[in-house]
Image (cartoon, rainbow, N blue to C red; front, side, top):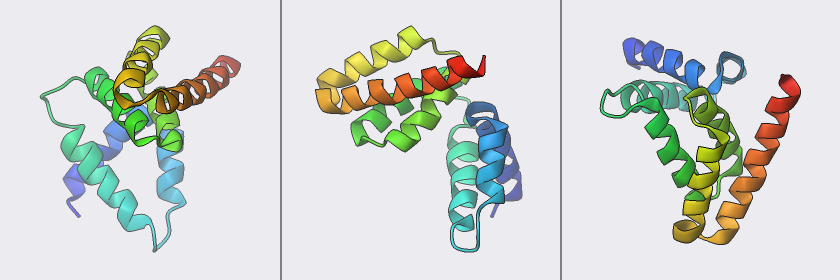
Amino acid sequence: MNKELFEKGLEIRRSVLGAEYVDNSIQNANEFNMPMQELVTQYCWGEIWGRPGLPRKTRSIINLAMITALNRPHELKLHVRGAINNGLTREEIQEIFLQTAIYCGVPAAIDSFRTAKEVFDEMDKEQ
């Protein structure tokens, strides 16, 4: 493991997904799944999200579209919050999901709207 990239990834991951979620993921990891936590933190967050070529807001837009296409609601839930943390508005997220309805399929987009609504409802209760 590259400690420098891991630390860089940990900082970015906390910034986007929230420190509480990330710290819980790391602290609750065990011998079986810790290598995945290390891989995701170092490679995904440190190496890729840490690149200067795209702003985080753009990376969030791409992630929301791709995760919708893959129909992964658990990951989408995390990345909707992350997208808000990266400066996207609810209206922009709505537009992303409308766009994905055409290119990824209406059922996938409907699931993404449903998942995002759950996140927004949670966020509204937190305020």
